[in-house]
Length: 84
Image (cartoon, rainbow, N blue to C red; front, side, top):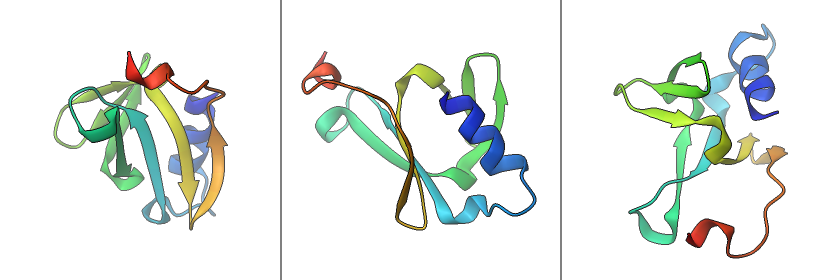
């Protein structure tokens, strides 16, 4: 589902990806959560977001997507799932 939302943000003519951010599970950072501007997404391929720095983030790690401080999509997760 996250990929469909990302496709809409990137390709829909009325959406401004510059006003959006993506939060995902990222081991090694404080709290194991990282939030990035959606504008840092270079492309969507297979099961991954391809970032402008060349890194790849699997879709299943996306926790939430927000635009203009509004929640657009959130993964249904249980407390503690991100601590693994």
